[in-house]
Image (cartoon, rainbow, N blue to C red):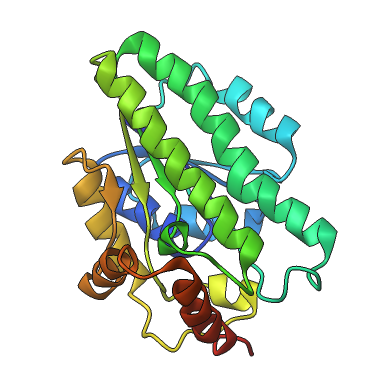
Amino acid sequence: MKALITGASSGIGKDIAIELSNLGYDLILVSKDLGKLTKVKEEIKTKARVIATDLSIKDNCIKLYTDLKNEDIDILVNNAGFGKFGEFNDIDLDKEIDMINVNLITPHVLTKLFLKDMIKKDSGSILNVASSAAFLPGPLMATYYATKSYLYKLSLAIYQELKVKKSNVKISVLCPGPVKTNFNNVADVSFSIKGLDSKYVAKYTIKKVFKNKLIIIPGFNIRLVVFLSKFIPIKLLLKINYNIQRRKGN
């Protein structure tokens, strides 16, 4: 059994890697930071290979698939991603393009390429890590919210296509709320809501993946927020979320 995990150097990606290793999976860990990946590898009980590459570059994503297509990947975890706080017109364009590439293009490319192989062998599982941001409008983090909404809806559409063809390939999308990871530092935000422990999120997520759960939302409070947001008029929801987002800024 083998799993490929992007964004595996810290946070949810690292803890999902450890959880899968505890279940007997050999791992391929991918991130830009070779040093952090090497440290994660030291915590892994099973065989682990580290690959340091910049996934914001599409060609690197394609090369990653080309190098690994004969590895018989059982689980693909698209976890790499980051956010940035600020008004849309103020955030550096190059930073946003990198965000779109990592959060959206990377999982799109890797999902498409590895899914083709999984469909051929009629087995395998893909976990796309989105966010509870996928369900809400995101003023002050507009691009981040939009990328997560894309990944969420892409995953749902693929799920239905697989179901119609009665494929044994599975896909899940993880939509957590605040989690205690390095994401906050990169995005320049601080959450007023207490973040969930990433180890708990990882354990909960993998449990749901093996139960073929489509939408995975750890934490009752976040599930409640997502449910209630469906009944709030969009302009009121925008106002509420803007005020919540404004309090996150450092």
